[in-house]
Image 1 (cartoon, one colour):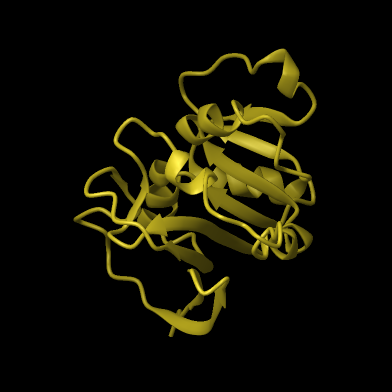
Image 2 (cartoon, one colour):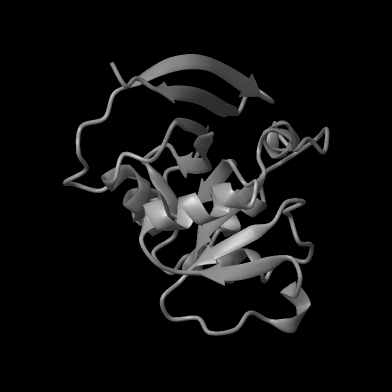
Length: 177
């Protein structure tokens, strides 16, 4: 069982603009129409947990990106859009209880997405792996991946891959020793 972060950040550490906009990420040149390893990740996971803000951002995309069940972590949403019916469900509660419930449903390897959601999982030391792709842009401000006050957690570098001489994707595994 693994909880895996898979996320892109600007080189100054932001995952979105201050208003949550991802335009800087969506409009990247992609000459080979690559998914930059996203399909490799989806083969490894059973489901996705994302926060409400991330869900709201991605549900506006032209195409639904997720081939696995999506669980939207939210204390404020009561219903998902009809267009998402059968593709996602709302979850709430304590993270360990949520994970136990999903594990009981056979959802053991989970992609964790969204800034606040990732921070919550890190706070409880529930992240086993992080795959972080640096995008060569300085946003200057925005929503940071990591915020002051994070607890110290050690990770081992596993690998780094460079795509299109532009994107730098590094994979880290939680060191629990």
